[in-house]
Each structure stands twice: as structure tokens, then as C-alpha cells.
Image (cartoon, rainbow, N blue to C red; front, side):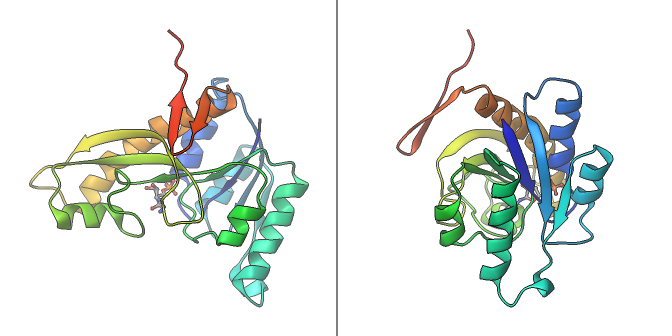
Amino acid sequence: MKVAVLASGRGSNLQAMIAEWQEGTLPVEFVGVGSNNLDAMALTIAEKAGIPVRAFPRDNYNDKSEQETDILNWLEDIGTELLILAGYMLVLSPRFVRTAEYPIVNIHPALLPSFPGLHAQKQALDYGVKVSGCTVHYVDEGMDSGPIILQETVPVFDEDDEETLSARILKKEHIIYPEAIRLLANGKVKRDGRRVIIQRDS
Ligand code: GAR
């Protein structure tokens, strides 16, 4: 499966996927890593792994729509069969999602449908939940509202702040995101409306 990744920053989820791919446990071909941010660590991580990279800085375009068109054309040119958002901090427009002929997946640092959008870990702390976690989901035209593929939980402790909770969640992200990609690449993920059925080997 030819996968492309969009990332805006640090790239630790991308790094976790690349590590499994290098170990031979993630049966995908990384056809490109793109970013809206020229300085994204994710681009450096990809280059080191020999994956083609492209930057789409907003300043190069008259508007967001032009930027998205360029990204869509690039994704098509490189033969994308699955688009992975890994800390991509721009919201894809409904037009982008409708135009893409491949599935798009995202990871979100909360147990959706709770705490969509920005600062999910802070939202969870402010609300006072005792359990949080992360969610891998399909991207639809809404905000973090697509069908859920995998989730993992973490406890929230009284002494947590945004940093400690984020770090605990991130460790789980690095496990479930590669796992979700592996399941998708192996054809083990079926959609039934909003429900996503995972076929596990017995
Ligand atoms: C991750 O925690 C991811 O869940 C979050 O950004 C971080 C990216 O880290 N994504 C979102 O909040 C999307 N709404 P990374 O660049 O180290 O993978």
C-alpha cells in the first residue's frame, strides 16, 4: 500500500511508523511526506529515512484553496493509496476530503468524540476526566468526527498537567497508529457505516 503522510511539526508519530517499517513489520511504501511547515522535524525524519519530502508553505499561495490543490495534485502524482495525517495542524477543507480518492486517517490525542479540535489534552484536564487516551479515525468533512478505527486509554492523575498527560498519551499514540496502519495495509479494516470492524487474527 502506497502511503503518504502530512505532518506539521515534531513528527514523533511518523518516526514510530518509520521505525516499524524499517523493522519490516509495517507493509507499506512511504511515497512521500509533505508539510505546510518548511522547518518541520517530520521532514528531516523522512529525509533521513530516504522518503521523498515536499513543503507547501502557506506564503507560496494566494489562499488555502490553492495550497490544498497543490497538495492534492502532489498526492495524486505520487500514487497515494492512503493519506496519513500525523500531527498535521491544518484542517482539511470539505473539498479536499471529497476530492481525495483514497482514505484519509488521523490520530487525535483524546478519546473522541470527547474533546475534538485543538488542545485536546488541556480540554480533558479542564473537564476533569479520570481517563483519557488517543483515537485513530477516518477523516470526514467534520472536525475529528470520522469513524473510529482504534482507541487506547490512559489514566489521568490528580497531579497531571498538560505536559505529563500529553506524554502519557503520546506513548500510546506511537503504538496504536502504526498498528492501525498495519491493519489497513493488511486489509483487516472494514467499514460498516460509522462502525469500523477490525478483523483480528485468532
Ligand atoms: C500528537 O499528539 C497528535 O495526536 C496531535 O499532534 C501531536 C503530533 O505529534 N494531533 C492533533 O492534535 C490533531 N488534531 P508528532 O508531530 O510528534 O507526531
